[in-house]
Amino acid sequence: LVYTQLQQYPRAIADYTALLRKQPDRLLWRQLRGEIRLRAGQYPEALEDFQAVLQRRPRDASAVCAVIEVMLEQGQLLDAQRRLDAFAQSDPNAGASVERMRV
Image (tube, rainbow, N blue to C red):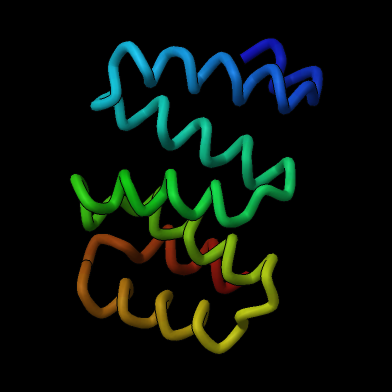
């Protein structure tokens, strides 16, 4: 967490990677590593982390929004919109997350 706040992304990623080697099923750590990778511009790696979370928790709003954010960063605007619309239709409780992404 400290390395992330200091924007020392390679060190933060290395720390989460080491933790995940010991406990690969910790989805929170995988989500956090994905978010750091996203900040660092490591889009394919970030997407890999978020997809791993979604494999275990397909309706995880945070992971879905993160995938959409990766798509937006990569210029995949139409795909991002489709993903957002599909998520909004599939989960009636997604309202706040969807509205935050639409802004």
